[in-house]
Image (cartoon, rainbow, N blue to C red; front, side, top):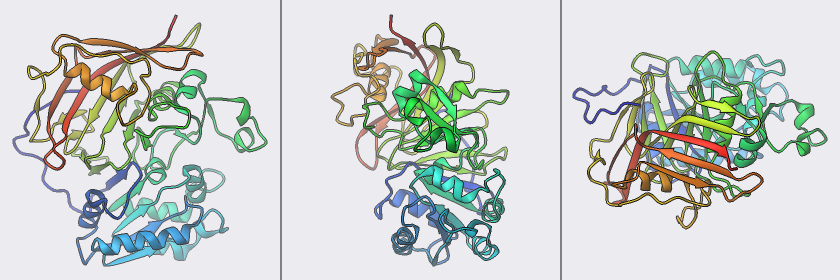
Length: 412
């Protein structure tokens, strides 16, 4: 990915009648001003925004809608309407009255929860669009669709993971989901990898959206990097697809989706956005796992990217890190895919940032703590770029990078 330091004439503010997606990684609260304020702005502004909320991914959708209504009204929405579609209410997704409610909104917010439950609620059993989903597509043509967590993931235009932990998926692979294979009495217990739906709802074509990307799983694996990369490789076809990892309490605003002026902006200051390009990666699973040539880009607060050309536009307050490194050597990890935020364990991004911040190192090799099998992970920054500065909102020193080459192999 190429970097341009300062864009002379930046893309002007997009208008509401252009297809916009606001994708949060999960963990939104009433204090998540970075997300709610942007949504309200593009939905018509304070005192004008009319927002419909879909909570079909929740166990108690109506109760969840009440909390969202309070949050959005307090942030300036004129009106918040619950769209009462639910997989537990037969026919709700094919109800003309409910679909008509969507058309009247200036933006739609799809809440977090169970992504599989959400997709089943919005699609017919044969995979076709319900009337409500068709209404959402119509609304998207001239407005804003937004989501958090599962609500973001469901908007993927690529195969959509519905189960599986990161390390286990990387090692054991992926399988297409079926109710029989992954049901409680099916074969799920006998497969340690990832089950996936053949496609998300398709609002962001060519992108596999993974929310809560920096979360620590119960199995000690990092974010969803490993699951994303294996699924991208296993389902790689004629058209290029990319991974988009959105950290918890972070968001990506994508403007003018599908147009020649499509671009995205990082919102929030508590993590980052990870882009995984495995389109040209080398990949074998026999006699052992070997992946090379995966390109990783990590963007932080206020960075932008032109998705069509993969050109990164660093925040105007950031500068090139090359020549300003503080460290001498990179430091490898023996727990590379840990997601512990205190930095005492591996942490992929911690190792990667140290590599970019080192004066002499251009490569670093780390390993997983898991030993059945143990994996070796090599990072190569020779053709990559990085930029940095202290955040104007938190004073934390931030490093973003682009074009980091990553290889993963079974350790001999």
